[in-house]
Length: 263
Figure 1 (spheres, rainbow, N blue to C red):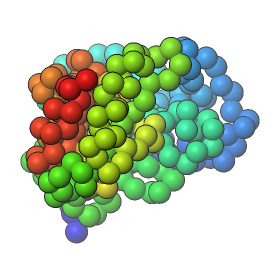
Figure 2: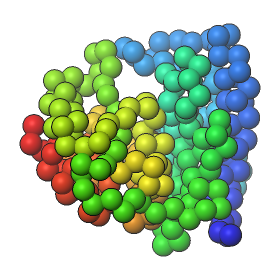
Figure 3: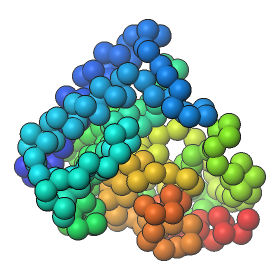
């Protein structure tokens, strides 16, 4: 059985507390007060409440740390070397449509490097977590990326742009070669869980453009600690800055990257 550190216990505990409200609101999704946050992008009262719970619980345990939050933005702390990166509800559109696939994502940076991560799926009660040098886990089970070596056998996850968001033509140009070369492409609308599923070997790779740091931070560490590779579309380590990400096991990462670059 995996032994979680005090830090992971703090992060996981905050996720569990935030999840209580999310599960309650998910059961009453039609009554949620929803406001427009931007074209095709919604924020619900559940999203805001979950962020408030996470902020309160993490501040209680680590009062000097800074925060980068999806809704509240950057909150500096006295300890400038540590920062939590938080998405209180990844998969808001799924949530608001009653689709039971969404997650809470929390990562911790130390001096700009990812050192701890939790991604919690409240519906399936799966707590994905990772700590630098310790490995990746779901609940108490150790995770490893898949061992597939051929793209033809691979199942790949992605995120598709919607409405006015992003460059649809660019995305379609990358989708076509991946569809031709693999056994399938899946789009679930929750980047954090897509990355967690790469870490768990449930899918063999993942790519997406135009993500924010809170969409990918926790998932990046999960994939790395599960033995996978994560880069941006150029094969560099600038995902958090560019917003483009490609993740896969060591055998499939380069072929997948080549496909995406062949557009």
